[in-house]
Image (tube, rainbow, N blue to C red; front, top):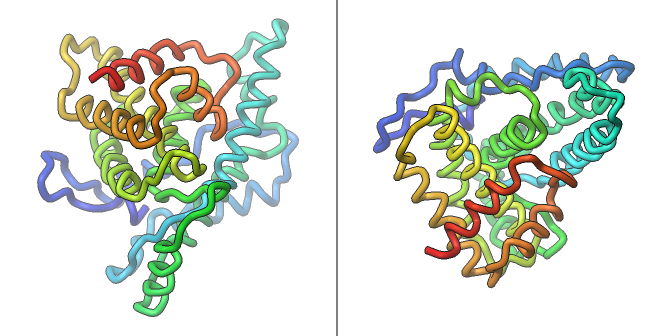
Length: 280
């Protein structure tokens, strides 16, 4: 995963090795049944692309988040429906039923294709991409950084939908470091909070903040990781101020426009993070 493979210059976080970067890119451990096997094979064949570093002259442009958001909505809607059935009480079976249409393989496929689409190899391509990114985005467009989209989609799958992602804790500080860089870049381009590109930014910030807080609680740390918590609190406050959104009800509606389950067991935690940040 070239975009996640770098050595931070100022933070006390080690650079990831090629093997570790490949581990970060593992697809979710899904058990798809009755799906299109050709699609699954195609997704598997594309996996080695994550373990090959792009040329040093490569830069990353922005990507459309529509495909990823749409597939996450499909999984979320399916899980909401399956979990509403009291007769289904096996977690693995619930996920298998929700992904019966091959949506997990489609999600992995779109992660890779959007990553490739974000590459700019030549000066001409780079100039073209930069000029395209400089234009004013329309409200219905959903543009974001690839790193921010990939990382927060994984957090959403694991933390919100309850799917397993064993690499999250192991590489937590490194992943959050990359996410911070992506969010900082996105915040610099935020307009007024009305466009979907601005709204997916809030979705990403809150998922990152939630992940940091959950890791802290799981490790039973009495004090929060101040630099990380401070970063996300400030990012939430800044988004709230620019978008003129202060109530949790309005913020929750923004999350729903991207993707969010009908009922989420830890929603009170997300609300607590929002209200704490906005009151600072």
